[in-house]
Length: 94
Image (cartoon, rainbow, N blue to C red; front, top):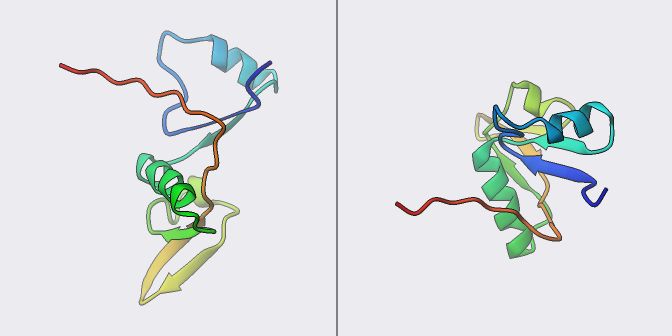
């Protein structure tokens, strides 16, 4: 396919099986990101930043393999901007 990698905070709905099959077959990559970090990384790209340190995710599986740093006694994870070609957004207006 048309999709090489999916970056999201929640990869699928309970009734969705297409993505699950593609991921398990190695046909699409998945990067799970905490919701706050996702917004932060998109904003960082829009601002032209090289990377940002965020406390969200420190000490979890989502931070494994990423650079960490202690700043003023608090632990942070280095996150790189998301420079996407496009985004799919679903919203509900009540």
